[in-house]
Image (cartoon, rainbow, N blue to C red; front, side, top):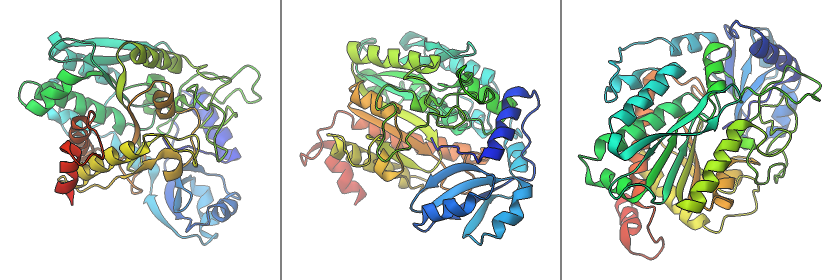
Length: 443
């Protein structure tokens, strides 16, 4: 989910290379640093303004993560900032990320799939195989097509009694470079299907809810991240004809939703600049990907109701609830959202990996985002629960997460989802029922 801000010089060079060149963008020798802000975010920004850099993650109170070209390194170190290095050679990290270390047998239940990242076409084949393994209670579905004509495919899963129950909706790969999100969604889907016949708890999930699962909301951007620029974020839609810079492609699909589309407090939740990585477009939903997603959400709201929505991203390890557009306005169900997120985080933390997730309202916990899916699907889609989950990690690898961390990431999310899904119909704060019992167990 993290904005990708570029200083002007790098914006011109990288954007042009990513859009026009058939050769991939080369990050050999580039370094990624986490700069500690110590509550002086504006001061650190001002010092860094003398450099050309790409910005990854940031938390204004704590840090900002930046990518620097080799020729910027001396000037950066002369600033005497407090930092540590996340990637000594980003190009080498990207190359290592693509090295295959196991052989997938092309069977849906072969867990070696989760030892590596995969090409887009293989992901689709994998999802088709998952559907074929559960043919009587699933169907391949679509929320439309991307700008370049790719199908926004997904699975609709349901249990006893057939379809039509309240919906659980999952989206992934909204931002192209966040490769781990599709792997997590696929693993969750696999466990729903394999557990239906063997585990009463998993069976209850599918018997109580219809699942609509979309691992690639931004397929064009994902393919571009695999073939041209590993750090590509947006979709691949051309800039408006009136834009001064016609090399700045893409809209941020997660700033396109028609809810507080150009309004955030504090300002800066999206950008009107086509060269920005948080570019919201000329008008709400002016990208084809978002148009299809909005139509799907509205249909589910009107026909079934939405019990839970999750938008999966990386990185930072957060469970974020509405609102994202305003840091001083809180959702009516903030207490319920916070309790469910806390119990989900506990389930992840007490698992084998001990990974910790921070939780809270999106804007006040992290930063402002206007036109986001979580706000729209809660505010307009009337979802009972709506979250952004930011996956691993917290600052060692960022977007270029090593394949060795895929299994840990997917397994801990399944542990969290087993808790979250089990509590969707819970009456919180009555001192009774599973939520109270979970709380007692965790203390």
